[in-house]
Amino acid sequence: MSDKTKTEQKNTDTEETKKALSGFDMSQYVANEPLGTGIKIKKKIVKIPVGRPNSQTFFRSHPSKEYHFMTHCLTDKEENKLYVLNQKILNELAELSDQVRMTTLYLCVNSKNDPFLFPVPLPDSEGRWNSWHESQSKCVKQAQKTWIRMQPNRSVQGYDVFAAEGNRTKPEFPNMPLEKILSIAFDDSIIDSMEHPLIKKLRGIE
Image (cartoon, rainbow, N blue to C red; front, top):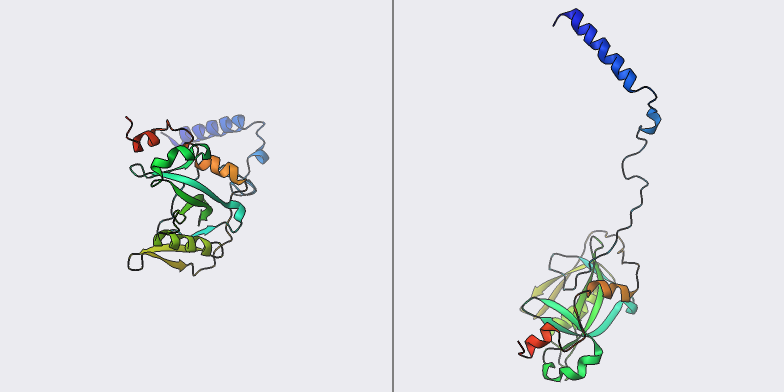
């Protein structure tokens, strides 16, 4: 391609660009601030796990008793899933009393402020308390004051507690009533009938 042809092609491209941009208001497209600055997004909580934090997770528990919930629980050990029991069927569960545990559920958050419920079984009907569960109770109460993580210690049949050394930010707990938190956490984990599959399985009913 000759220099003359290249010049003509360049002039043509320039004219087409000018034509395309005719009436284009650049002020509507100039970025004044980085993407996301000034934009407020509220995270919608759609899942709240139920379980003990692992040994690498720093967490805090809610200091208010309004966010501690005592209930009867039943665990499907094959699925590792915790169910809450409707009080109306408790009298019918006498034959499964060895499986039902009175449990306190504590609202907690991890270092990312993701909420979860920490279930801590209470002493049995005769006042005997599993040492691991008693240790969990002490840990979750300490977590009301500072960020901690729990490390199992089999030699003492309990947990060692490690407090965070750095300056951790203040925990942000979900701004919703306990009833709403429980409805999310146990959306598909409620037993309110003797016909529930787990009850039938434990009773040996096919």
